[in-house]
Length: 369
Image 1: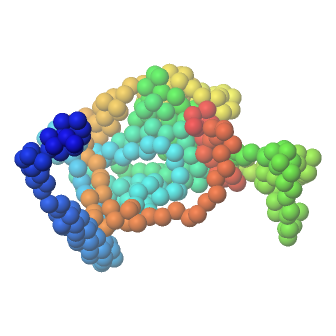
Image 2: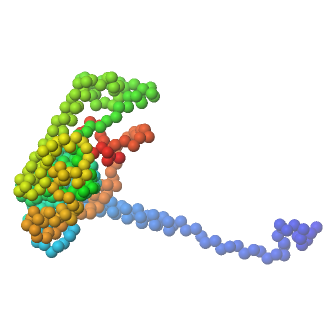
C-alpha cells in the first residue's frame, strides 16, 4: 500500500486540491450565419436593382436616342471651341460581341461616328489603330462607315497607326483622309487568307473513320477530315478564286482610298508609287517603308496625327474627346449571367491560331497567337 501515492506518479493524490477547469467561451455559430445572411440579402438587393436598371435602360433605348447609350469624356481640354473625337480600333477586327451588351466592334464604331456626325462642335475624328487585321466583312464594313462619314459630313478622319496596323488594320486606314505611322509601325500585309487544319492523318492513327452524308459533291469542300487525295482539284480552284476576288477588292480599296486622299489634300500627302502592287503580296512593311511606297502620308506619333488634323481644320487648337458607355448595373449582371454552350475540347498540345474555319481574313498571320 502506498497511501501517499508516491510510487505511481500518474495517480492523483487524494489530498491534492482539484485542478481548476479552464473557462472555455461558448461557441458562437450565430454570428457567422448573420454575416452570411446579410451578404446574401445584399446580393439579392443588387440583383433586383440590376434587373430594374436593365429594364429601365432597355425602355430608354427604345424610347430615347442613341445618346443614352454613350457619354462624352474629355481627354484633353485646350480651351478650344472645336473638338476632335478619338476612336480606337484595337485588337482583332471582327463581328463578335466586344462587351456584355452584345455590341460588336463595327456597331460600336458606327455609333460613335454617328455621334461625331451629329455634334456641331466635333469637326473631325482621330482614328487610333493597333490591330493585326481580322475578318474580311468586318474590315470592309468599317471601311465603308469611315468613307460614308467623311463624304456625308465633310469632317476629316486622320489615322494614327500604333505598333501594329497590318492587313485589315491597313484596310480601314485606307479610308482615311490622312495616315500617320511611326517609323517602327508594322503595317502592310496586304492580302487575304483562309486558314484551316487537316487532321485526317491523326484520325487514321487512332482508328477513326469519318462518315459523311451530303447533298452535293462540294458540300464538305472545307472539311478537315478529308484525305489529301480526296480533295478535288475543282475545290482548290473555287477556294482560290474566292481568295483572288477578295484580294482584288483589297487592292481596289487601297488604290481608291489613297487617290481620293490625294485629291482631298490637294497633293500634299504621299502618293502611291507606280509599282505599289508589287509590294501588295502579303509582306509586312515598316512605317518607313510604307511611307516611301506611298501607303502612308506622314511619319510620326499620335501627337503628330493631332497636329495634322488641326492643320486640316485650319490650324487652331482643338479639344480631344472620346465616347464611352456609362456604367450600368444591368450590363454588369448580364455579364455575370452569361453562359457558354457545352463544348468538348481536345488539347493537341499545339499553340494554334484562333481562326475560324471557312472565314476569309485580312490578317497578318505572323502576329496571331
